[in-house]
Structures are given as structure tokens and as C-alpha cells.
Length: 207
Image (cartoon, rainbow, N blue to C red; front, side, top):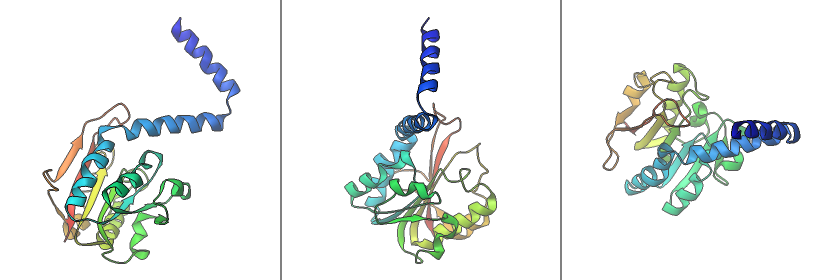
């Protein structure tokens, strides 16, 4: 009986509520679900404090959407100067106020000076915008360029969903795996209600 009632209510909603409004509500709910995932809370509760403890003051966050909207507040709380970049112009509303770049991470080294950042985080971009090995190579090379020598490059990705980037020449040439604080060189979270693949963070320093 309840299923029939839910289906009936759904039909009424589809008939009455405009498609644009329904899509907006759907994405708002999905954003809340994503930002509550352990793999996302890890950024706020563990990763950013460890970067601060490692004397990082200037951070680039690559890929900014509604589920990242709290990143600026967390960085401000820890005294981190946040910069953001996203190729989608609509992402400006979630970016760092006054320090958001509308552009492609693969070309950020053409917009930002070499060695400008203490740390860079590229999370959920491989396979979601940067979709091929050539693009991954270009993105990682650009991040290694705008991070200072011995600065951090942190890559979050989904093993099993995207091609493993770790054998790319640029990784071996420009980056060194590193333990961050008390963490190993990588941390992996299992699949969850939103993601059907694990979510992994790899930690590097620039050579």
C-alpha cells in the first residue's frame, strides 16, 4: 500500500513540479549525501589539519561542486589560503571568493606561477573531466609545476572505475610517494551508498 502511495505522490510531483526544479532538488539532496561520505569528511577532519601541521599555508583545490561548498569554510578555520579551479563556469558560486579560476587544470601552469602552492588536491577529477592517460599526464605535470619543490600533490580517484594513473611517466619523474602525518602513502575507502567503487587518496611530494 505504501509503495502505491509513494508512486502516486511521485506521479503528482512530476506533473506539478517543473523539471528544472526537480533536477535542482535532486542535485541538492545528492550533494548533501556526498559531503557526508567518510571519504569526503576525511578531507575536512584529517587531510586539511595534517597539511596545516606540515606548514602548508597556500592550497589549490581542483574540481569544485556543490558537495565541496564547505571546503572554503574549513580552510578559513585552519588558516589555509584556498584557491579553487573548475572548468565549469557555474562552479564559481562554490569556489574560493576572489581566488577561483575558471579553467582547465591541465593548463593551470599557464595561469599560475611555478611553485606558487604549498599543496594541491585533485579529487574526483580523473574519470570525471580528465578522462584519458594523456589528460591525466598533463594535469599531474601542471600540478607538479605550480606546487613548490617538496610541496604536496594529493590525488583522489576511484580504482576500478578509471584507468590507474600511477604508472604514468610524469608520476615517476615529478612525484615521490610520501607519508602525511601518521598516514601511509595512500588511504582507501570502500564503496558506499553513492559510489560503487572504492575512493582512494594518494599522497606525494614534488621532486
